[in-house]
Each structure stands twice: as structure tokens, then as C-alpha cells.
Length: 262
Ligand SMILES: Nc1ncnc2c1ncn2[C@@H]1O[C@H](COP(=O)(O)OP(=O)(O)OP(=O)(O)O)[C@@H](O)[C@H]1O
Image (cartoon, rainbow, N blue to C red; front, side, top):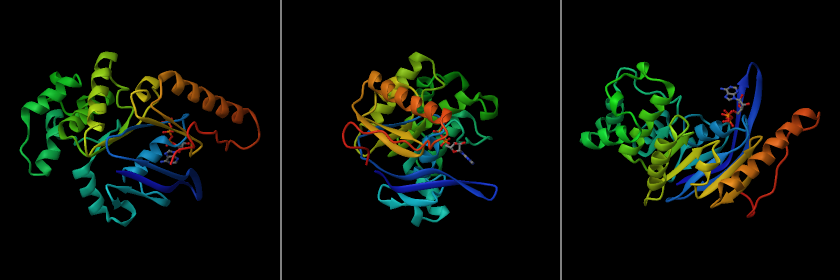
């Protein structure tokens, strides 16, 4: 459902191009929940934004449900985002003039589908926002806004969900419930979830974990335990620290437990 083919991305800083992603290829198939992990600054969010069509990569291509994003116009991309994708990003804007409830209802209205009022109230309760359903995003914390985005995904059940720290703003109990819902969604026919996380216990609920290091896929774990995930993260973080104190290159790749990420 998600195919990345040698994605490159560089940010423009003044008249300099700063390369961030270096030829990332991966594949997420339907029924999968996949985590992306890596040290801070390794390019996780940038990768997610490129794959989700929110940033146009400077090289390579992303294909979602058979549609090559580089061949879509901005209008076609917006339509794809609206109909087939879900986002759980803290910085992904909600409509400022609509309440929490209305933001969750919006994709249904835009798709000219009946608004499932009861279902929306139920998912707002699930994410602990039942009492804030009528508040505007401007009156909510960043975490509460992210919960509205979560509720929207759980109500709409889009085929492809991109999430960035989906449980980061939740208390432990709500986090477990929401994670159960996301895993359940990912494991349904015709769905998948790709999530960035720093939390080994979230990664351990995923089918695979892809580790980024300096903008490259460094390692992959299948059906990982939290301990295995924490072990790889500790090793990658140590590499970053070692590179910071040395004057040499920080471009170090580690091996893979099963032949590397695709
Ligand atoms: N708009 C931008 N312009 C210039 N550089 C950027 C921009 N966005 C991100 N970067 C840089 O790109 C690199 C990768 O950033 P990114 O947010 O993708 O990393 P990350 O792995 O998600 O980090 P974190 O775990 O800290 O959120 C960082 O060095 C960051 O400073």
C-alpha cells in the first residue's frame, strides 16, 4: 500500500541544500503496522511527510495504493489525502473554525457521506475528549488537538494512516486503548499504519520496526520485543554520540537482523 523508491530529500538553507534522506526504499503492505524509529534528527518526520505527500521529495518517488505521488497534481494529491489517507500529527492543522466534533465529522461531509454522530461521540470518548467535543482547536492544547486527529482517523478508518507519536499526548491507560484501536485498524483488510515513535513499547506492538540513522535505513526488526527495540536504539544513539565527539563522518550504517529493510 505504501511503496518508497529511493526517496531523497534535502532542505534549502539559504543557498545551500542540506541533504536529509538518502535513497530510502521501503514497502508497507495491507494488514501491516510498521514503526519508524531512529535518533533525533535522523529524518523520521521528513520521511513520513514525503511518503504522505505533504512534502515533495527532491528525488525518488512514493506510491500510495498504486498512485505515484510525483505524477499527481496538487489537486489530485489533495483529493488522495482526503479520501485515502489519515494523519495523526500534532502539527497537522485542524480547521480552526470547527469544533473538535466538527473536525472529526469533516471528512464525512466532504465525502458527502452521512455523519455517524454516535460513532464520532464514541471515538472522542475513546481518546478522552468527550468533554471537549465542542471546543475549538485554538482552545485546545497540542496534545488535545492530536487527539482530535486520532478520533478523526478512528471514525473514518482511512486505508492508509500516517502517525507521528500517536500516543505521546495520552495517559498510559488511554494510550493502550488508542494503540489497540490503531493495531486493530492496521490489521484489517485494505488498511495499514505507518507510525513514527520513540517508545519501544509502541514499537513492540508493530509488525516491523524500521530504524533510520542519518537519513538511511539502518536496520529492521520483525515482531520485535520492547527490549530488542531499546537495544537497537541504544546502539544507534551511541553511534550518534561517538560521531559527535569525533571529527570523522557521521555516516555509519549498522547491519540488519534479516537482510535489511526494503
Ligand atoms: N523545514 C526544514 N528546513 C530545514 N531543515 C529541516 C527542516 N525540517 C527538518 N529539518 C532538519 O532535518 C533533519 C531531520 O529532521 P526530522 O524532523 O525529519 O528528524 P526526526 O528524526 O523526525 O527528529 P525528531 O525525532 O527530533 O523529531 C534535522 O536535522 C532537522 O533539523
